[in-house]
Image (cartoon, rainbow, N blue to C red; front, side, top):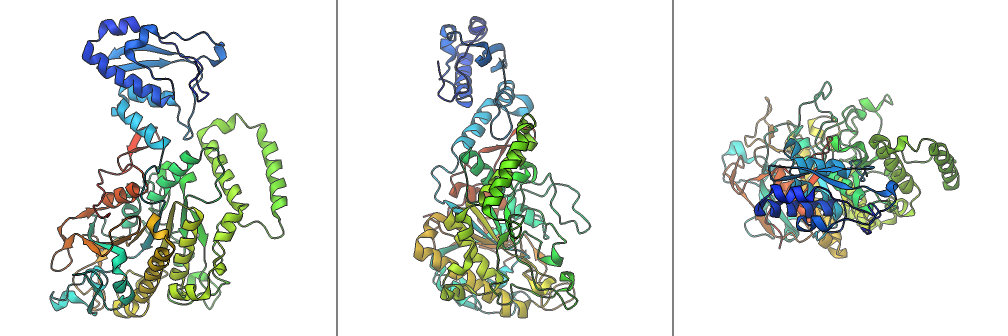
Amino acid sequence: MSNGHGLFPALAVRNADRLHAECNAAELDFLEKDASAISKIWHLPELRIGELPKILIDSVPDTNWCPIQIASVDEKRLMLNILGRPRSDCSGLTRRQWIQAGGTGLLGVSLPKVLAAEESRSEPFAGGRAKSVLFVYLFGGPSQLETFDMKPEAPSTVVGPFSPIDSRTPGMRICEHLPMLAQSSDKYCVVRTLNHPQNDHNGSHIIQTGRPMPPAERGPARVNAAPNDWPSMGSVVEYFERQAAGDSVRSIPGYLYLPNKHGQIQLDGRYDRLGQYGGWLGAETNALATRIHKKAGASGNPYCSTDNPYYRDCSDDELTFQFQGMAPPEGVTLDRLDRRRSLLEQFEVGAAQLARTQSLAGYNSARNSVWNMLTSSTLRNALDIQQESASLRDRYGRNLFGQSLIMGRRMVEAGARFVTVIWDMSDGAASGWDSHSGLTGSCRDHLLPGLDRGLSALLEDMSDSGLLDETLVCAVGEMGRTPKFVNRGTDDGRDHWSHCFPAVLAGAGVQGGTTYGRSDKQAAYPQDLPVSCPDLAATIFQSLGLDPHGFIPDKQGRPVSLTDNGRPLDIFG
């Protein structure tokens, strides 16, 4: 009897009579459900406990025989011994491990959870409203009181330097320096009550993963990523992309980071900030990131540079958008690359046994993915920003943020599933959204005009092409700013504030022209409908067709929920 998957041509079950003798009807019904679950996990023909005495499959060659033996019945759990050669899935885990964990209740994992984990991996992205996510990350902490949650009736110590203007959304007043976003507010929803307890820039972990930052060694500045970090949402999406693709060739990465890895533009990459990586899910789920350098300082040392490409127009010579580590050496053609790959594969034939280990298999998978993308005309064409019209590029803004948004849209069009475009902090508070000082000038002259032009152009552009219908856009920082307009001895700044800050969501069915949640009179705390980072993650995952309460395997192979009890927001039409 074939199971249709080429895994097990035969199945044998023993000791069924003892099973029936030891279980009552209710227990048998429970075990029957477990047996059905087991057969689905192993892709076997439906196995029913009530039919066990009848199941005896014709004999087959011993080398292909992998019988299942009922070893014992304990606490309404079916404990199995699975004999023969174990079979590994794409994550390196054997289904034997999954079943043993579920069948015995080991470490609190029940078989229904195992089944849910397997099913969540078997058909990811089914039924999602969004085909892709464009995550616009405004690192540093944009002030809610200078953007989307202004409080003109608050005391003068709270209000700040700017005035509100009306938008197309009734009751939503936004900053006077966001006029284009005010006129396009019918395309997005403002969530006003996002909050979390990590009141510093390490909120970068929870905003990108939906999980609190775990204890770890994080370098002298205590901001670096660590191997035990939770995987970013993009890494989770990349994991499921790999599961769905199987052995098929992918020409576009599932998870991309533009225009640089987080922290790379500050002090020439001294910081390797947390939250952007795969963490314990594995380096193979890390984003592929491009690299755009800022201009060197007078001494030629980039560490001394005060250049900020987010604040100025960038030339095409700067905007290479080349993925790090993927540029072929000068003079090496694609034919030569293919010959090099052939030689490498010949060398690896003798190491086939080693390739079965999880770590090396992951390396081979990642290497093959990069190779396919390196030789992909689809990716090369998508990376060519000069294919865009000059007028459209002007509309987005020629600064690094605007041009990176164009590239993010192009990656989504080419088939990328999760794209992060970061407005990172160059150097110093006044160089980005971390407005401890110089808030008035940096917001008025650079930050707000750049956000206004770039984000409004993105929404208009994607709406005109229809791409917004199938792409979820989320623009958010890792925190907001203090309600009190004074900071650390200066009278033109605000300190960190993660207790209430906004996010802008659009596309993929999000009901535009709306707000979600309401803050108090000083935009300090949620007054109703508070939104956690797990809620935001659940909303993003569900939009893609991923069950927020589905599972991925941790380093020990145990199923771990995609979110920490996150609930998707009711913002979709």
